[in-house]
Image 1: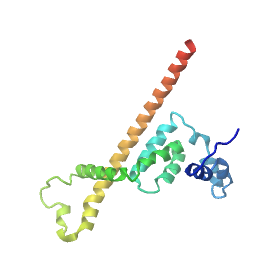
Image 2: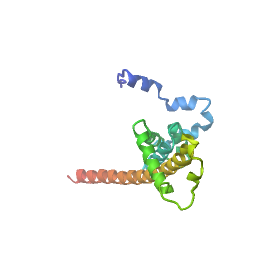
Image 3: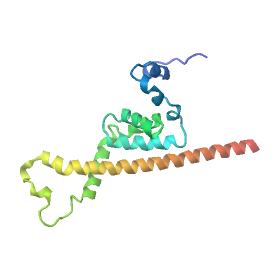
Image 4: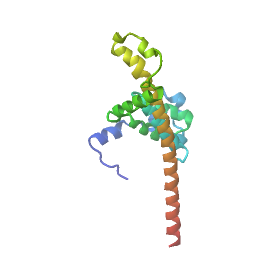
Length: 185
């Protein structure tokens, strides 16, 4: 069978994507190749796909950089589908990150009650007013954003797991129904 002709970006990607054999031959990966290349991590099953979706969404939400390698690495002990986990980290991209971080900041402010009127002198107002933007960043924005990101990551992980598990069941039910209809016609 002839191999399809590829040009441009598709050819470059096809020529540079590592293969199973290249993983097995790599001297650095050889000690862990049996873990990385376990077939269960690369198959699309009803258990591994939702795990991969949840893992990818959580890692993609929490980490602005290096999220793909970490998702692939964490897929091993969690028995999540590696391609799905790595693919869903793409939630973290230049278009969605500002929106995600603004939402995380607002959620964090609401959870930490940074807007609330607190009797007495709260810590945030006890510090000198001229401390500047670094104080604002470390005392108000940082903690609020981190709390918000944790909440969003947990919510996205649970929602992604549930949606992919339900989607998997619907897809399988449809396949069975079509098979049954085809068989009896």
